[in-house]
Length: 241
Image (cartoon, rainbow, N blue to C red; front, side):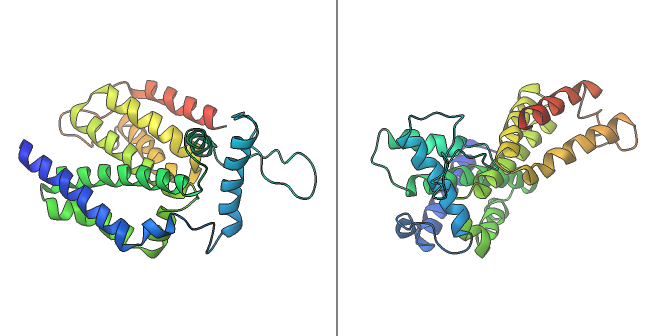
């Protein structure tokens, strides 16, 4: 694809999703407190942020506002990196719950961009490549939870981004893309373990290749290192654990 077509694609993607943001009224939802379904779960997220901000930014001591007694120390169901980043921004700006929404939305957009790039590479058609993320965000569930407090949106975005890295690894056979894929899916698993399903599928490909049951490339195998590629999987599982 020539440079002008790539630039057109990038500009169109940005303009379309700026338009979608206004269409979905995100500029007003930015100021909304936790609302709608799973309000209690959204409140947990904001509570951890506020406690980081107010209690010395101790990363490994996340807390919630526990009114029933005790110190409120919490064991979140996900790695609290997004809450810590938000609280760190609070140190520079005034505290505002909407900052986490922006972070989650931007991460999802990066994932959508990666998904669109995969589609563009496979179809060489700008319309179809942009239609895929637009159809996804048009889902009321994704549209609502994209600009929200919950980590589901950014986990999904990182999942798409990891798939883009794997696609690049498949094309170029450069190990750097595979390392980027592994690191990305590490954070996917730290945020939401069920979203690592594509990563499991990649290792299913490795197994099928190693057993010589399926050949996915006409000019050799995807995973040149064979079983050595299991080492990153073990590390990812260990770190998440």
